[in-house]
Image 1 (cartoon, rainbow, N blue to C red):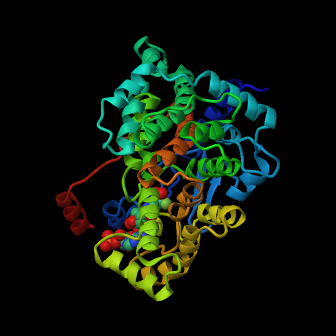
Image 2: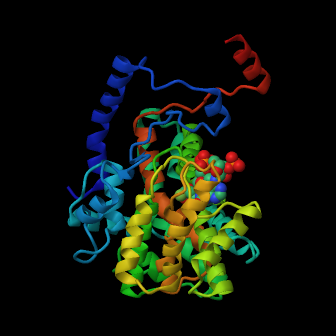
Image 3: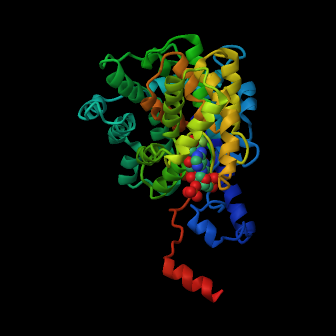
Length: 434
Ligand code: FCX
């Protein structure tokens, strides 16, 4: 069957049963003890969310529906033989847990295209902002303007029962995924290309068409964008953007609102904005000290960054305890396609220089590179050099993972999220008594 919706529909009863069974048989099984450190430490280490599209192991890193990134690259249908996976196939995997055939990925591509028309008021909404507004502000404004067409909101207003809400959630998610590339490209062209928008090319796949609308048609750039969408698509549920979308949607706010919440979190420098910060930082080093900067000089730069109270962007992680496989995957891509790129060479040097310094601080739990130190480098190489735009690219990628889970949130009928909070007084009293 070539239709994602009907595949999904077939799976839902089985998964609902599975959830019910886990609840009734194992509902009282303990998943760990919560300590005061965890409550005061950003809930680190508390297992508290259900998130189907992906899982992060501290040592091994991300698996998308059980597949490592190299496995995804090998198994998912590609635009060209041996090339990077199609975003449509990736989406199919994230939603269903099954690797699609090329035909299924192409059918989904057509479906997304048929949903991709962006109403004019979205562009007018963006145009009402000063061009100096951060690209993420312009992008989120566009996303909220898309919300006007929410099927989910309409269905809820018309009294659709909870058990059927996954259907309008699916509609909204697919429309959202189909439309955000055009909105993102509009922001880019408005900011950096005098507003000369480029229409979609329906002969292209999702990622390639996005690149085309941005203004880049080099086949290697298309591959870079496909890879970018893969590595940034999802990173389990507890990261700021994933978690934000999940909690907002749990109040039965529609997928546009949930995704916009995710994007506002993504715009934080400790999360998705690190893509921008990392590229800005590496380029500023290249500009000030030249591309052949010595190791000694680089060490000085890292210390200067730390001593000025900043974090080193693109290093460290809340959950990972080894080098991010998303980094490794992009490193391989860069070695193949842009081995001599000076910024890439500089990142390779930083990969050696930064971890010992972060380790020497004695508090950093993971000194290794994460996805963000490298993900902008190939795109920058092929001409997309506007650093401040990078989080928008990250946001377009995240529409895939966040949406896949939003559909399952409603299909599984997950309840409103409401963890317990306590005050400092409460904590002191409780601890003294225990
Ligand atoms: N540079 C400087 N200090 C760092 C650091 C880094 N790269 N990584 C961690 N630290 C510091 C923390 O700031 C914290 O210091 P504090 O106790 O004085 O506040 C201490 O080390 C312990 O932090 P740790 O437990 O290791 O890490 P957290 O889970 O608190 O934070 C992030 C994880 C990712 C936020 C942190 O490593 C960081 O700020 N990295 C740089 C920004 C970045 O690259 N973010 C992107 C992450 C991710 F890939 C993504 O979301 O896209």
